[in-house]
Length: 410
Image (tube, rainbow, N blue to C red; front, side, top):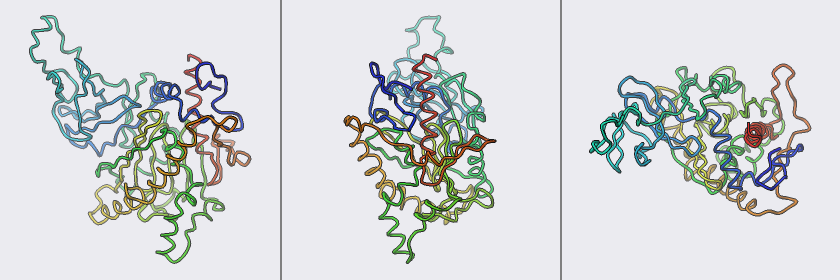
Protein backbone atom coordinates (compact mmCIF):
# COMPACT_ATOMS: atom_id res chain seq x y z
CA UNK A 1 0.00 0.00 0.00
CA UNK A 2 1.07 3.59 -0.64
CA UNK A 3 2.19 5.76 2.23
CA UNK A 4 0.06 8.94 2.37
CA UNK A 5 3.10 11.20 2.66
CA UNK A 6 6.77 11.19 3.41
CA UNK A 7 7.46 9.77 6.84
CA UNK A 8 4.07 8.08 7.17
CA UNK A 9 3.68 4.31 6.92
CA UNK A 10 -0.09 4.19 7.24
CA UNK A 11 -1.72 2.65 4.16
CA UNK A 12 -4.04 4.67 2.00
CA UNK A 13 -6.44 1.74 1.64
CA UNK A 14 -6.59 -1.28 3.90
CA UNK A 15 -7.61 -4.79 2.92
CA UNK A 16 -11.01 -4.31 4.57
CA UNK A 17 -11.53 -1.10 2.56
CA UNK A 18 -10.95 1.58 5.12
CA UNK A 19 -9.79 4.50 3.01
CA UNK A 20 -7.55 7.10 4.58
CA UNK A 21 -9.23 10.51 4.61
CA UNK A 22 -5.88 12.00 3.65
CA UNK A 23 -6.44 11.03 0.02
CA UNK A 24 -9.03 13.83 -0.06
CA UNK A 25 -7.08 16.54 1.77
CA UNK A 26 -3.33 15.97 1.50
CA UNK A 27 -1.71 18.38 -1.03
CA UNK A 28 1.22 15.99 -1.49
CA UNK A 29 -1.11 13.20 -2.55
CA UNK A 30 -2.89 15.56 -4.93
CA UNK A 31 0.38 16.57 -6.57
CA UNK A 32 1.28 12.93 -7.03
CA UNK A 33 -2.13 12.28 -8.60
CA UNK A 34 -1.46 14.88 -11.27
CA UNK A 35 1.56 12.84 -12.38
CA UNK A 36 0.54 9.28 -11.52
CA UNK A 37 -3.12 9.39 -12.57
CA UNK A 38 -3.69 12.27 -15.00
CA UNK A 39 -0.19 12.04 -16.40
CA UNK A 40 -0.41 8.34 -17.26
CA UNK A 41 -3.94 7.75 -18.54
CA UNK A 42 -6.28 8.77 -21.33
CA UNK A 43 -8.29 11.85 -20.31
CA UNK A 44 -11.46 13.03 -22.05
CA UNK A 45 -11.01 16.53 -23.53
CA UNK A 46 -14.01 17.04 -25.82
CA UNK A 47 -16.65 15.72 -28.18
CA UNK A 48 -16.36 15.94 -31.95
CA UNK A 49 -19.84 17.49 -32.08
CA UNK A 50 -18.38 20.53 -30.29
CA UNK A 51 -15.87 21.18 -33.08
CA UNK A 52 -17.68 20.18 -36.29
CA UNK A 53 -16.21 22.84 -38.59
CA UNK A 54 -12.65 23.80 -39.56
CA UNK A 55 -11.27 26.30 -37.05
CA UNK A 56 -13.67 25.28 -34.24
CA UNK A 57 -12.03 24.94 -30.85
CA UNK A 58 -12.67 24.42 -27.17
CA UNK A 59 -10.32 24.74 -24.23
CA UNK A 60 -9.90 21.96 -21.68
CA UNK A 61 -7.61 20.54 -19.03
CA UNK A 62 -5.63 17.33 -18.66
CA UNK A 63 -5.23 17.33 -14.93
CA UNK A 64 -4.07 20.90 -14.42
CA UNK A 65 -2.49 21.22 -17.87
CA UNK A 66 -4.49 23.72 -19.99
CA UNK A 67 -4.99 22.59 -23.57
CA UNK A 68 -6.68 23.72 -26.78
CA UNK A 69 -8.77 21.11 -28.61
CA UNK A 70 -9.49 22.17 -32.18
CA UNK A 71 -10.20 21.12 -35.72
CA UNK A 72 -7.50 22.55 -37.96
CA UNK A 73 -8.71 25.22 -40.36
CA UNK A 74 -6.30 23.85 -42.96
CA UNK A 75 -6.92 20.11 -43.10
CA UNK A 76 -9.60 19.31 -40.51
CA UNK A 77 -7.19 17.42 -38.25
CA UNK A 78 -8.14 17.24 -34.57
CA UNK A 79 -5.36 18.76 -32.48
CA UNK A 80 -4.78 18.88 -28.74
CA UNK A 81 -2.13 21.47 -27.91
CA UNK A 82 -0.87 23.03 -24.71
CA UNK A 83 -2.49 26.42 -24.24
CA UNK A 84 0.85 28.11 -23.66
CA UNK A 85 2.84 30.55 -25.76
CA UNK A 86 6.38 29.37 -26.49
CA UNK A 87 7.79 32.81 -25.66
CA UNK A 88 6.85 33.72 -22.09
CA UNK A 89 4.21 31.04 -21.40
CA UNK A 90 1.02 33.14 -21.47
CA UNK A 91 -2.12 31.27 -22.52
CA UNK A 92 -2.99 32.04 -26.14
CA UNK A 93 -6.70 31.10 -26.09
CA UNK A 94 -9.00 32.55 -23.45
CA UNK A 95 -12.52 31.45 -24.39
CA UNK A 96 -14.19 28.14 -23.66
CA UNK A 97 -15.31 27.67 -27.26
CA UNK A 98 -15.12 29.48 -30.58
CA UNK A 99 -13.76 29.46 -34.10
CA UNK A 100 -10.36 30.81 -35.08
CA UNK A 101 -7.86 30.45 -37.89
CA UNK A 102 -5.03 31.47 -35.56
CA UNK A 103 -4.12 32.01 -31.91
CA UNK A 104 -2.33 35.22 -30.96
CA UNK A 105 -0.63 35.80 -27.64
CA UNK A 106 -1.71 39.16 -26.24
CA UNK A 107 1.55 39.62 -24.33
CA UNK A 108 4.05 40.05 -27.20
CA UNK A 109 2.01 39.20 -30.29
CA UNK A 110 3.43 35.78 -31.13
CA UNK A 111 0.91 34.18 -33.50
CA UNK A 112 0.21 30.52 -34.28
CA UNK A 113 -1.96 29.02 -37.01
CA UNK A 114 -4.76 26.60 -36.09
CA UNK A 115 -2.36 23.68 -36.33
CA UNK A 116 -0.03 25.30 -33.80
CA UNK A 117 2.69 26.41 -36.21
CA UNK A 118 4.41 29.68 -35.24
CA UNK A 119 3.65 32.06 -38.10
CA UNK A 120 4.31 35.49 -36.64
CA UNK A 121 6.94 37.01 -34.33
CA UNK A 122 6.95 40.84 -34.08
CA UNK A 123 10.44 42.35 -34.44
CA UNK A 124 11.92 38.92 -35.11
CA UNK A 125 15.29 40.47 -35.89
CA UNK A 126 15.87 40.40 -32.14
CA UNK A 127 16.51 36.66 -32.29
CA UNK A 128 19.19 36.63 -34.97
CA UNK A 129 19.32 35.04 -38.40
CA UNK A 130 19.39 31.46 -37.11
CA UNK A 131 16.08 31.70 -35.20
CA UNK A 132 13.98 28.69 -36.29
CA UNK A 133 10.27 29.40 -36.05
CA UNK A 134 9.46 25.79 -36.89
CA UNK A 135 10.81 24.62 -33.53
CA UNK A 136 8.70 27.08 -31.52
CA UNK A 137 5.16 26.10 -32.44
CA UNK A 138 2.52 25.21 -29.86
CA UNK A 139 3.39 21.85 -28.32
CA UNK A 140 1.02 19.00 -29.12
CA UNK A 141 0.27 16.46 -26.42
CA UNK A 142 1.89 13.08 -27.15
CA UNK A 143 -1.27 11.09 -27.91
CA UNK A 144 -4.75 11.90 -29.25
CA UNK A 145 -7.40 9.34 -30.21
CA UNK A 146 -11.16 9.28 -30.56
CA UNK A 147 -13.80 6.71 -29.75
CA UNK A 148 -17.31 7.07 -31.14
CA UNK A 149 -16.86 10.84 -31.36
CA UNK A 150 -15.30 11.23 -27.90
CA UNK A 151 -11.87 12.86 -27.96
CA UNK A 152 -9.25 11.63 -25.52
CA UNK A 153 -5.68 12.83 -25.03
CA UNK A 154 -2.76 11.60 -22.97
CA UNK A 155 0.37 13.23 -21.63
CA UNK A 156 2.10 9.83 -21.82
CA UNK A 157 3.43 8.67 -25.17
CA UNK A 158 3.43 5.02 -24.06
CA UNK A 159 -0.19 4.81 -22.91
CA UNK A 160 -2.01 1.74 -24.35
CA UNK A 161 -4.29 2.25 -27.38
CA UNK A 162 -7.57 3.94 -26.45
CA UNK A 163 -9.73 0.93 -27.39
CA UNK A 164 -7.71 -1.25 -25.06
CA UNK A 165 -7.79 1.36 -22.30
CA UNK A 166 -11.58 1.73 -22.42
CA UNK A 167 -12.04 -2.03 -22.24
CA UNK A 168 -15.47 -3.07 -20.97
CA UNK A 169 -16.63 0.54 -20.79
CA UNK A 170 -16.94 0.47 -24.58
CA UNK A 171 -20.22 -1.48 -24.35
CA UNK A 172 -21.83 1.47 -22.59
CA UNK A 173 -20.14 4.09 -24.75
CA UNK A 174 -21.46 2.23 -27.80
CA UNK A 175 -24.97 2.41 -26.34
CA UNK A 176 -24.60 6.16 -25.86
CA UNK A 177 -23.18 6.57 -29.35
CA UNK A 178 -26.32 5.02 -30.84
CA UNK A 179 -28.90 7.14 -29.00
CA UNK A 180 -31.66 8.09 -31.41
CA UNK A 181 -30.00 6.07 -34.17
CA UNK A 182 -27.45 8.71 -35.13
CA UNK A 183 -25.95 9.26 -31.69
CA UNK A 184 -25.92 12.23 -29.32
CA UNK A 185 -24.46 15.68 -29.67
CA UNK A 186 -23.19 18.06 -27.00
CA UNK A 187 -23.97 21.35 -28.69
CA UNK A 188 -25.59 23.24 -25.81
CA UNK A 189 -22.24 24.03 -24.19
CA UNK A 190 -22.08 23.39 -20.45
CA UNK A 191 -22.80 24.87 -17.11
CA UNK A 192 -19.97 24.73 -14.61
CA UNK A 193 -20.20 23.81 -10.96
CA UNK A 194 -17.37 24.68 -8.57
CA UNK A 195 -17.16 23.15 -5.12
CA UNK A 196 -14.74 23.29 -2.22
CA UNK A 197 -13.55 19.73 -1.97
CA UNK A 198 -11.52 16.98 -3.59
CA UNK A 199 -12.28 15.85 -7.13
CA UNK A 200 -12.68 12.19 -6.13
CA UNK A 201 -15.77 13.06 -4.08
CA UNK A 202 -17.66 13.84 -7.30
CA UNK A 203 -16.43 10.67 -8.98
CA UNK A 204 -17.60 8.52 -6.06
CA UNK A 205 -20.92 10.34 -5.82
CA UNK A 206 -21.73 9.80 -9.51
CA UNK A 207 -22.05 6.03 -9.08
CA UNK A 208 -23.61 6.01 -5.60
CA UNK A 209 -27.32 5.06 -5.67
CA UNK A 210 -27.15 4.43 -1.91
CA UNK A 211 -27.25 8.17 -1.12
CA UNK A 212 -30.16 9.11 -3.33
CA UNK A 213 -33.07 8.36 -1.02
CA UNK A 214 -31.52 10.43 1.75
CA UNK A 215 -29.58 13.27 0.15
CA UNK A 216 -32.32 13.90 -2.43
CA UNK A 217 -35.35 13.18 -0.27
CA UNK A 218 -36.88 16.58 -1.03
CA UNK A 219 -36.85 15.74 -4.74
CA UNK A 220 -38.51 12.39 -4.13
CA UNK A 221 -41.14 14.17 -2.04
CA UNK A 222 -41.84 16.54 -4.94
CA UNK A 223 -42.23 13.61 -7.34
CA UNK A 224 -44.64 11.97 -4.90
CA UNK A 225 -46.70 15.16 -4.71
CA UNK A 226 -46.79 15.40 -8.49
CA UNK A 227 -47.51 11.76 -9.23
CA UNK A 228 -49.64 10.88 -6.22
CA UNK A 229 -47.44 7.94 -5.25
CA UNK A 230 -44.02 7.28 -3.79
CA UNK A 231 -41.02 6.86 -6.05
CA UNK A 232 -39.99 3.22 -6.50
CA UNK A 233 -36.35 4.28 -6.12
CA UNK A 234 -35.75 2.85 -2.62
CA UNK A 235 -37.39 -0.45 -3.50
CA UNK A 236 -35.41 -0.81 -6.73
CA UNK A 237 -32.11 0.03 -5.05
CA UNK A 238 -32.66 -2.67 -2.45
CA UNK A 239 -34.36 -5.48 -4.37
CA UNK A 240 -34.40 -5.03 -8.16
CA UNK A 241 -31.94 -7.56 -9.70
CA UNK A 242 -31.67 -5.44 -12.85
CA UNK A 243 -30.16 -2.64 -10.76
CA UNK A 244 -26.53 -3.46 -10.07
CA UNK A 245 -23.06 -1.98 -9.74
CA UNK A 246 -20.26 -3.41 -11.86
CA UNK A 247 -16.49 -3.07 -11.69
CA UNK A 248 -15.64 -2.96 -15.39
CA UNK A 249 -11.89 -3.14 -14.81
CA UNK A 250 -9.30 -0.45 -15.41
CA UNK A 251 -11.00 1.87 -12.93
CA UNK A 252 -14.16 2.12 -15.05
CA UNK A 253 -17.47 1.37 -13.33
CA UNK A 254 -21.18 1.43 -14.01
CA UNK A 255 -24.47 1.38 -12.15
CA UNK A 256 -27.13 -0.25 -14.32
CA UNK A 257 -30.81 0.40 -13.65
CA UNK A 258 -32.30 -0.93 -16.86
CA UNK A 259 -31.52 -3.35 -19.69
CA UNK A 260 -29.16 -2.29 -22.48
CA UNK A 261 -31.20 -4.13 -25.09
CA UNK A 262 -33.89 -2.37 -27.09
CA UNK A 263 -34.28 1.35 -27.49
CA UNK A 264 -32.37 3.95 -25.50
CA UNK A 265 -35.14 4.45 -22.98
CA UNK A 266 -34.84 4.38 -19.22
CA UNK A 267 -38.10 2.87 -17.97
CA UNK A 268 -37.08 3.45 -14.34
CA UNK A 269 -36.15 7.09 -14.83
CA UNK A 270 -36.21 9.25 -11.73
CA UNK A 271 -36.13 12.40 -13.84
CA UNK A 272 -38.09 12.92 -17.02
CA UNK A 273 -36.10 12.76 -20.23
CA UNK A 274 -33.20 10.53 -19.20
CA UNK A 275 -31.57 8.90 -22.21
CA UNK A 276 -29.45 6.10 -20.74
CA UNK A 277 -30.30 3.31 -18.27
CA UNK A 278 -27.04 3.58 -16.34
CA UNK A 279 -24.54 5.88 -14.68
CA UNK A 280 -21.07 5.35 -16.13
CA UNK A 281 -17.63 6.42 -14.91
CA UNK A 282 -14.73 6.32 -17.35
CA UNK A 283 -11.50 6.53 -15.38
CA UNK A 284 -10.33 9.01 -14.29
CA UNK A 285 -12.66 11.98 -14.87
CA UNK A 286 -15.46 11.32 -17.37
CA UNK A 287 -19.01 10.28 -16.50
CA UNK A 288 -22.42 9.92 -18.13
CA UNK A 289 -25.57 10.47 -16.09
CA UNK A 290 -29.20 10.71 -17.22
CA UNK A 291 -28.95 12.88 -20.32
CA UNK A 292 -25.65 14.61 -19.73
CA UNK A 293 -21.92 14.14 -20.03
CA UNK A 294 -20.09 15.04 -16.83
CA UNK A 295 -16.44 16.11 -16.79
CA UNK A 296 -14.57 16.47 -13.50
CA UNK A 297 -11.57 18.83 -13.47
CA UNK A 298 -9.29 18.88 -10.40
CA UNK A 299 -7.91 22.36 -9.67
CA UNK A 300 -6.35 21.82 -6.25
CA UNK A 301 -6.65 19.36 -3.42
CA UNK A 302 -9.76 21.19 -2.21
CA UNK A 303 -11.18 22.82 -5.33
CA UNK A 304 -12.97 21.02 -8.14
CA UNK A 305 -14.65 22.18 -11.34
CA UNK A 306 -17.45 20.07 -12.80
CA UNK A 307 -18.74 20.63 -16.33
CA UNK A 308 -22.15 19.25 -17.28
CA UNK A 309 -22.95 18.98 -21.00
CA UNK A 310 -26.57 18.13 -21.86
CA UNK A 311 -26.81 15.53 -24.63
CA UNK A 312 -29.39 15.56 -27.41
CA UNK A 313 -30.21 12.90 -29.98
CA UNK A 314 -28.48 14.17 -33.09
CA UNK A 315 -30.83 16.23 -35.23
CA UNK A 316 -33.53 16.34 -32.54
CA UNK A 317 -36.26 18.92 -33.07
CA UNK A 318 -36.47 22.05 -30.95
CA UNK A 319 -39.25 20.68 -28.75
CA UNK A 320 -37.19 17.61 -27.81
CA UNK A 321 -34.07 19.64 -27.17
CA UNK A 322 -35.99 22.10 -24.99
CA UNK A 323 -37.58 19.31 -22.98
CA UNK A 324 -34.21 17.66 -22.32
CA UNK A 325 -32.72 20.98 -21.27
CA UNK A 326 -35.57 21.81 -18.90
CA UNK A 327 -35.45 18.34 -17.35
CA UNK A 328 -31.69 18.59 -17.00
CA UNK A 329 -31.93 22.00 -15.36
CA UNK A 330 -34.57 21.04 -12.81
CA UNK A 331 -32.32 18.42 -11.24
CA UNK A 332 -28.73 19.13 -12.33
CA UNK A 333 -28.86 22.85 -13.11
CA UNK A 334 -27.42 25.63 -10.90
CA UNK A 335 -30.79 26.05 -9.17
CA UNK A 336 -31.83 22.44 -9.52
CA UNK A 337 -32.70 19.98 -6.79
CA UNK A 338 -29.90 17.45 -7.32
CA UNK A 339 -26.61 19.26 -7.75
CA UNK A 340 -27.32 21.68 -4.91
CA UNK A 341 -28.01 18.75 -2.58
CA UNK A 342 -24.77 17.05 -3.57
CA UNK A 343 -22.66 20.18 -3.17
CA UNK A 344 -24.03 20.77 0.32
CA UNK A 345 -24.07 17.21 1.65
CA UNK A 346 -21.71 15.05 -0.41
CA UNK A 347 -19.01 17.67 -0.93
CA UNK A 348 -19.13 20.56 1.57
CA UNK A 349 -20.09 18.51 4.62
CA UNK A 350 -17.74 15.65 3.75
CA UNK A 351 -14.92 18.15 3.24
CA UNK A 352 -15.68 19.75 6.60
CA UNK A 353 -15.62 16.35 8.26
CA UNK A 354 -12.29 15.21 6.85
CA UNK A 355 -10.35 18.47 7.20
CA UNK A 356 -8.88 17.42 10.51
CA UNK A 357 -7.51 14.16 11.79
CA UNK A 358 -9.72 12.25 14.21
CA UNK A 359 -7.62 9.13 14.71
CA UNK A 360 -8.58 6.27 14.89
CA UNK A 361 -11.65 7.36 12.89
CA UNK A 362 -9.70 9.19 10.19
CA UNK A 363 -10.94 7.10 7.31
CA UNK A 364 -13.94 6.60 5.06
CA UNK A 365 -15.51 3.17 4.80
CA UNK A 366 -15.88 1.65 1.31
CA UNK A 367 -16.71 -1.93 2.28
CA UNK A 368 -20.46 -1.92 1.72
CA UNK A 369 -21.46 -5.16 -0.03
CA UNK A 370 -17.95 -6.60 0.05
CA UNK A 371 -19.21 -9.81 1.67
CA UNK A 372 -21.72 -10.41 -1.14
CA UNK A 373 -19.69 -9.14 -4.08
CA UNK A 374 -19.57 -11.69 -6.89
CA UNK A 375 -16.90 -12.20 -9.54
CA UNK A 376 -17.73 -13.61 -12.96
CA UNK A 377 -15.49 -16.62 -13.59
CA UNK A 378 -15.21 -15.88 -17.32
CA UNK A 379 -14.90 -12.10 -17.50
CA UNK A 380 -13.43 -11.44 -14.07
CA UNK A 381 -15.89 -8.57 -13.59
CA UNK A 382 -17.07 -7.83 -10.06
CA UNK A 383 -20.81 -7.38 -9.43
CA UNK A 384 -22.78 -6.04 -6.51
CA UNK A 385 -26.29 -4.97 -5.66
CA UNK A 386 -27.37 -1.43 -6.46
CA UNK A 387 -26.59 0.02 -3.04
CA UNK A 388 -23.18 -1.64 -2.70
CA UNK A 389 -19.90 0.21 -3.18
CA UNK A 390 -18.55 -1.99 -5.97
CA UNK A 391 -18.17 0.99 -8.39
CA UNK A 392 -16.31 3.09 -5.82
CA UNK A 393 -13.92 0.25 -5.07
CA UNK A 394 -13.38 -0.22 -8.80
CA UNK A 395 -12.28 3.38 -9.12
CA UNK A 396 -10.08 3.40 -6.03
CA UNK A 397 -8.50 0.05 -6.91
CA UNK A 398 -7.09 1.45 -10.16
CA UNK A 399 -6.24 4.76 -8.50
CA UNK A 400 -4.19 2.90 -5.91
CA UNK A 401 -2.37 0.83 -8.55
CA UNK A 402 -1.23 3.98 -10.32
CA UNK A 403 -0.22 5.69 -7.10
CA UNK A 404 1.73 2.64 -5.95
CA UNK A 405 3.53 2.41 -9.28
CA UNK A 406 4.67 5.99 -8.86
CA UNK A 407 5.65 5.42 -5.22
CA UNK A 408 7.74 2.38 -6.21
CA UNK A 409 9.50 4.39 -8.90
CA UNK A 410 8.01 2.42 -11.80
